[in-house]
Image (cartoon, rainbow, N blue to C red; front, side, top):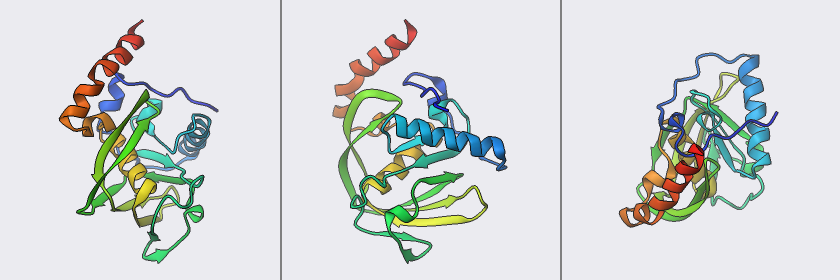
Length: 184
C-alpha cells in the first residue's frame, strides 16, 4: 500500500525518533509499504518519520546503480550491492571517516530542491535487522550518502540543515514557499 510522504514543515521531520523495541507483523507490513512507497516515488531511501511514524526505521535501495560504491563490506566480507538490497534497518549507529566530499542530494520530503551537501566520504554503519541479526556495513559512494541521509531523518535532521551558510541562504525562500504551500 502506498503511504503519503510527509512534507517539509511537518513537525515529525524534526523529531528524535523512538527506538524500535519489537518486530511484529505490523512492523513488517509497514516495511513492505515503505519499500513500495519509496519505489513508487523513485527514491533511494525512506525513513519512518517521512511517512509519519516516530520510529528508528528506514529502508534503502540503490541496486539500480551497482557501480555507486567503490567498495562494500558487510561484517568484514566483500559483497556485491545486489546481495543486501533492499536494505531495511532499525536503531542504527554510524561512524564517520575523516575525508569529506560534496555531492548533490534531494529528499522525498522536500520536493523540487536539490543541493550540494558536504558529508563524510566513507562510513561504517551498524544496522540491526528485523530478524535480530546485525549488519556492519563499511562503504562509500551513494550507499554511504544514503545511509547518512536516512539516519539523519531518524534524528530530526534534514539535508538542508547540512548546507553551507551560502547554501542555506540560497534555499531559504524556496523552503518558506514549501511551508506556505502546506498551509493552503
